[in-house]
Image (cartoon, rainbow, N blue to C red; front, top):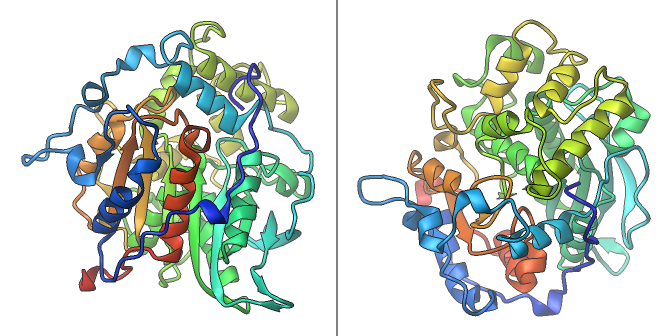
Length: 433
């Protein structure tokens, strides 16, 4: 997805390498993250500056921490290989070259192809692996994995995590959203909305999984724009369908909210693009492959999707792609784009006033970011947490990892964090914290 000069690495989860960090409940998500990080921080590369955890992302007056100052980085130098070699190589090693298309992922051990109904009964494709004990399905949590922007199940990062989580005793569903992968191949007229329709789909997926034999709870892991989807789910579920971020037009299309807590095993969001509208602004200008390889690679991915979908005048503008995709959905209309932006927006943009959405989140949620992310500035994480005071929502900024490149950066830390979160995670009930 990013740029093709580096090969995507196979970095499977090894259950024997997981550092277990057991602790008794009830712990808030923020307390849990502090405890687990302390137990496994030795797994991070030596010499790196210390990570920033939730309470270190703002001061007593709730002013956001200077993240780049803490890590000794300059934001305007993160897009270049010459000045951010590790960040960009880890990004490429986790994301690989272009994946967008209609091909099928090669078989995964222990997984079968599955079709799960979306909120409007649209069949969503996935790879589903049940955790078993001998020949019987185990009683276990089911974890849903989401790819990055315009990604599908051919990304090895998804396969490596899915196979490893199943080996650790979880049921796992790697999902291809509407407009992606085999879902698009079967239903090519169902376009991607980049926000709202997929949020409703994920709640429907949670309900479907919860009804399956052997499933105790559901959890969710998202990367890049998939992390945006994960945070939208955390917010929308907590809002119970009533919030200024939900315009009447979107509320009408999504229908009545089903009031049952979803993904109560927890939600992990890796490298979300919190100020996505600023990213859209950047992608409206042609970027250099030499000076800004990540942005240029993203523009190439956008342009290739436009070509494949037959959209006019294909270029690298993600803003134009969003508009053309939305025009093919049930949300189509004069305000479709602004409604969609309002739904997914997590931080203010220019003069637009914004309510702190994650304040209403009612399931444990952890956001993990890298200080040297070349696409989504890490400062945005501090800006977000300075605005919310919800013990169920925690944040972590690591010294490295680029954009979703946490496995190449510190594989055992990354996998230990995920397994601990779902195996022995924070308290799910805010009233008990």
